[in-house]
Length: 382
Ligand SMILES: NC(=O)c1ccc[n+]([C@@H]2O[C@H](COP(=O)([O-])OP(=O)(O)OC[C@H]3O[C@@H](n4cnc5c(N)ncnc54)[C@H](O)[C@@H]3O)[C@@H](O)[C@H]2O)c1
Image 1 (cartoon, helix red, strand yellow):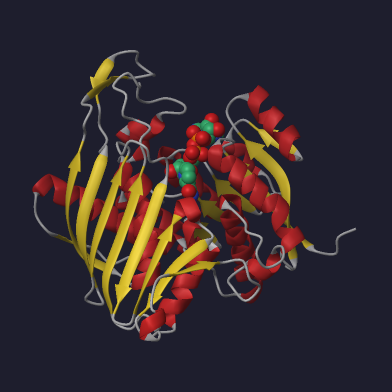
Image 2 (cartoon, rainbow, N blue to C red):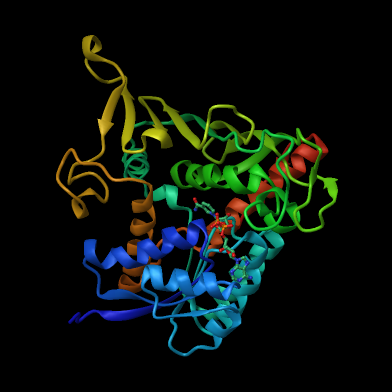
């Protein structure tokens, strides 16, 4: 019998993220010593057969086919939103009003206007809240944050991030509906700017501080696609590719690029930071390694170090196996669940909160506005 306090969780959506979150809530108590243990109370999906099958597969106590039922239930403490972007605001605001804690997938809203309402709802209700920008919790990325905060890089000059995919190149790919909602701006908010660059921006501002201004270009390479919901060929409303220059508050300069048209790349998220003394490079395809160059090393031995982040004194790793054995993508969500719960217990909420998620939405909004106006845009402060 567990003497831990139950944290009753309901997950909305049983797709890709529904699985990563369910796995995180299921495993976190085994690997982290926390006072609370998440209980998989309910999963919600609109298709009853699928919702029931998912509940059985993952060990949920129950399922619902309408998220509003979850909000009404007294036996649920935390509503976790793992549904497409057009549903985030309505579910989060209703959950906060009912006094539930809310975790929400990224981007927080389709627009900053939507995201701001979500921030106001959780802050008015004083409920714990978090956005699933999980890349902060790749141990190598967390270590990059430690090194920067310790001043190892010195003054930062450059930040460079890319997120490259290639899955929408075919002109025969339809848009919209289940599975392809990312190609429909009315559901997604935007294309790669809100989907992929949002991740890069969240990590960047966490590592290197606020972005103050941007200038961007976007392109929609395939202008028309058949829409899955109407059956008609319709104008494509999203940005297929997006690139922007940015200035940070600390004076450093940045380049960001995302596309779903980079043949050969599936999820190539890379970031590089160049400081006065040292540089850091990280690549999602090799996520347990941090590349580090320190100019202060003895000249003869100076070079890029490829640090295998698996040791107990490296972030999160003492919770896992033995030095040398690495972990993967799913663990970033387990780390995030652990930090969220620890935040409840210490009274120091873990970031990114909804307000930090809003900050990213302000940047993506400025990027899209800049691409449209062909001018530099200042970024609003969250
Ligand atoms: N953190 C990350 O790295 C990451 C990765 C992928 C997706 N995401 C985000 O996660 C969210 C979900 O993306 P996904 O890839 O899991 O999508 P998905 O299409 O795989 O799954 C979405 C699920 O939501 C369900 N759904 C849709 N509307 C619903 C409603 N009204 N009520 C209940 N269920 C509903 C769908 O049936 C489906 O099960 C999006 O906001 C996306 O941007 C984040």
